[in-house]
Image 1 (tube, rainbow, N blue to C red):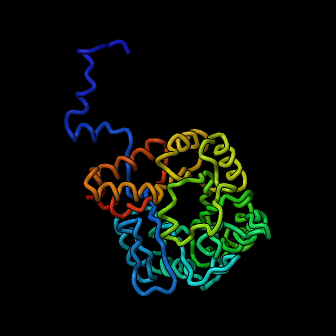
Image 2 (cartoon, helix red, strand yellow; image 1 turned 135 degrees about the horizontal axis):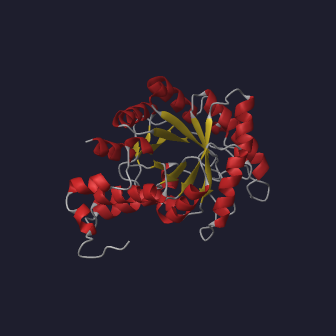
Image 3 (cartoon, helix red, strand yellow; image 1 turned 90 degrees about the vertical axis):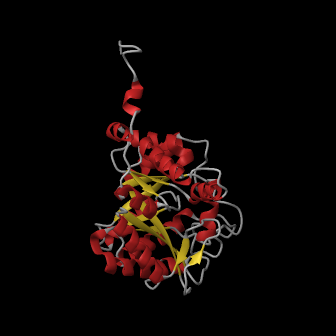
Length: 328
């Protein structure tokens, strides 16, 4: 660049809203967004989640209404998390054909057909009585290989119920390969896998654990989720998951790991998703309730930051609200 001030004035292109729209480098569309939804067995009315104002544990009927509203607003996809009435050590409800997520998937598949992308979380923490993401050994550690057998069975159950994309979030070694093999062998080769390739052991998950009723009853998940100081480890996990058959990959959380989103986007040639997690949502809603921040602007700024970092898809609890505002 050779020209200098006063000839060069970058502010010229910031002068009006129309000019700023015209030269915007990053855009957010309703179809970029995926709405997480919680569905709980055995309740007759939606149950508010105290730490996530505006988010509820749905009944099957309220789930259908929320899903319809999201699709009508233009949201690109839905991801289901289930809370069963009964939990046990192996998470038996997770692959039960009559389990709550399988029922929810069948409802939404019948209602919406191909109008949206139906995803389902594929993990065990919501279904186990101990709150960990897998089968435990006698000493209380998560047994990686025994857990893979459960994940494979869950994937097939979700596929049979109409899921388009399974989303394994347990961070077990080899989980994508086990799931891909099981789906293919069961005749569900068209079901895609969104790999939680990068999932950090984060403090930002606290409100989710209330929503999904999945807080560990002892210890934590640091032995299988990733350590926050590490970045190269994330790249290794991403490449391993792609080698095992993942169709696209996800980084979780979003806001505090935008550098990782960027590194993944620069490394791979598949869609990259970022999960704007419960703690990110709760912090904004809590500060807004106190009148300390401009809620709507903060929401859009956080979402644009994820897109700017390289996320093609964003999982966010604000998906329906934001989609409506983008189409207004």
